[in-house]
Image (cartoon, rainbow, N blue to C red; front, side, top):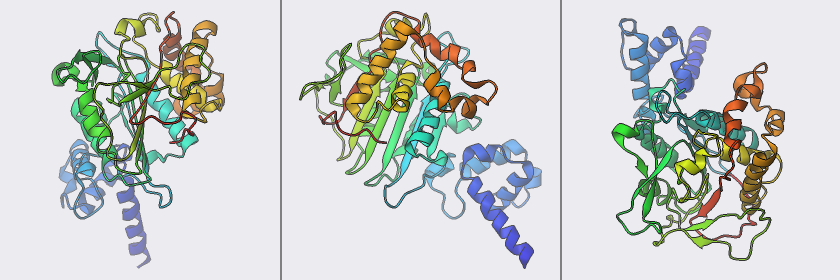
Length: 387
């Protein structure tokens, strides 16, 4: 009886661990065979190869019974807090390795943001989904369809009190606007890893997937670091801090679109890495020949770690000042190193120095990348910044 109870407990632990696709892929063949049996996939797992078992388990998902569609795609279900609601995040970083447009720091951006969400904002690791080229789970490679699936995971089951984060670091572009909504006549886009085959993700699509469904009491905070990302979510209002600005007037917001497009009662705030009118060349000037990457995330984390993110207004102004200061005085790794990021990501020996050359390159040019704050509504910039 004792052995049977121990076996049942072991099976329960195994099923729970299997909900995390990253842990599932790292399991031994014996553990995978046991899962195949427990989930009723096959009675003879010994005839199956490891790759085949992993594929079937990712596709099957769940622990028992009817399998939710998103868990079939290999995404763990988010946990919930009865008092504060759920917190979950989607972090996308694309370096476009092996292409002519290869970047250097976008994957590292997702690692830093993961650390920041867990250590500074109380997110649980299982509630953060990362898509980048370093992932072993095929569903976490940042292709266009995988990004759409991941956004579906992020948005499914949202209730009042829930808070979600969307982050993108990679290439952006513009295409002609045929709707008449855009003030400059151009739609902003994100470029997934397979964009040359599958096409870009247009701001109109992101609005329909991320903004419009937000119901009463739900909150979205987005960070988008790419070219032309100022109005990437088609939010109707924007605030762009000026150089040396330290305060703002009673109505700092400006219209960001010809057409008002809101949520379904929730709130959405986005910080973009640059204005819509900044071209790839403008942002590449920041990095001495490489497209802008790392500058915005660096300034965001520096502001949080230095206690300069208590309000939305303080945060966005601090981010601009941080970038300007880095251009004039060099790249300061002190805050991030003190926070312990280097040990968490790179190990205690290598530390932050291994990543410094790639991200520091974002501050070797002469032009200033201007972060922009956009929102579904005009609100007081002295409102507390929380996630």
